[in-house]
Image (cartoon, rainbow, N blue to C red):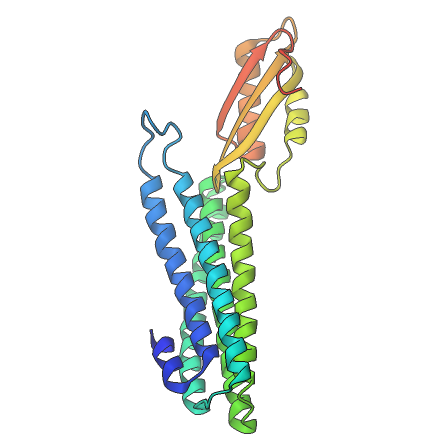
Length: 283
């Protein structure tokens, strides 16, 4: 809010662009928080997987909004480039510096929070995926704030240059740089959310490698029709057909396969169908 008021007061598009960047991070966090609360609702007859996909939809909305804002910044930068406006450089530097200090403070808090989680995990010897996912969420927020801090540094630098040289074209140029930074953020969000929505294999995993790992277990002759996908980030599901050897112990083999999927790949929701001969599905 301070940067919006300051942007109009000083005439700086760069400060307004930085305000838009920070606002989108706040908006993203609020939207994600609401989605997390809704996704915590239990599964029912009409939503057998629950409401986890709301997190993905929130990320998709955030990404599309970021694209819109970045192109609005590019458009306004082009207009400012053609008709430069007077800018109050001293006030610009002061407000941008306050924004920078705020971002550095939040980055310090989030950085310490992520470190404490890692320390606790090692202390208790936990391999838990919940802690690991929480650390990833904190790290993601931390990187967003670092991006905000870099944008604030850019605005301060623009203010210093304008103060000593009166080159007002630096302001729209810095706005374009911030717009590009926002576009990169939107690309990561859109890529991840689209990949989940089209039932893509979770990043860092390979369905063929998982099948090969399962086939190495005693009693397993063949794995086919294997599907692995994300219901939301950190919530992975798998289904597969397994052809067993003639004398395989069903219960022991099932336990071994589920244990492999859980501890080696972090896949908790599994559906495995045993067969005496390949059904031909997934060929």
